[in-house]
Length: 288
Ligand SMILES: [Zn+2]
Image (tube, rainbow, N blue to C red; front, side, top):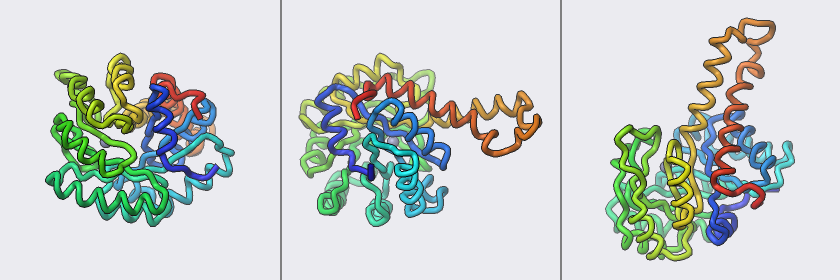
C-alpha cells in the first residue's frame, strides 16, 4: 500500500478513543523494525523524520525512496504516513516536494500572528497536494535537534485560532517535554489538555515527548482527546542498551559476530519490542 496522509487514521483514532504512534526513524534498521511491527500488530503507524535525521539519512528524497521501497518489498498493508517532525517553514516545503505524506510545521517559536500566517500558507499547499499537517502551539520542553523549549502549557484560545486554520492535528504543550523526564517533573497538565480539547472539538491532539510518561497518564491523555503520540528517545535507549549488551558480552568477537547484520540485530529487535509495547498501550493494535 502506498503512503497515506494521517487524516483518516487520526479521525478514526479520535472517534475510537485510541492513539496512533509516531515513531521517529534514523536509518534502515529503525524503519524496517517499525514497519514490520506495525504490520504484525495490524496497526496504523506514522514514521517521524526530524530535519536532523533527514540530513543524516542523505536527504528527504532518500528517505522517501527507502520507505516506499520497504512498503512494497515487505508487503506492508497497514496505513503508513511519512511525517516531517518539527519542520521549519523551508523544511516543510522541501518534504512536500520530496513526497512525504504529512508534515509538521513547528511555528511555536514565532509570535502567534506569524505562526498563523505561515501555517495558513502551508495548510493551503497541503490541502492541494493531499497531505496532512500538524501545527504546534506552546513550545514542547526539552531539546529536539537543537531546538530547546521550556515545557510551557499552551493557551487554549491560541490553540483554537490555529485549529481553525484547517490543520489536520494540533500539538499543544501540556507540560510534556522531549527526551528523558527529570526526577522533579510536575506531570502532564490535564487541566490544560481538557481546556484545549473543549475549544478545539474534534481536532486530533498530539502528545510529543512520549518517552517516560507513565502509562496511566498516557491513558488519561488519550481519554481527553490525544490521538497521536510521538515516541523517539525510548527507541534510541532500547537500541543502545541491546547493542551495549551484545558488545559487552563479547558476541562481536565470536565467529562472524562482527557482521553488521548480526551486530545491529539485537538493537533492531529491541526497537521492535518497544514499538510493540507502545502500540498496545496506545490501543491502536488491529485498528488498521
Ligand atoms: Zn516533538
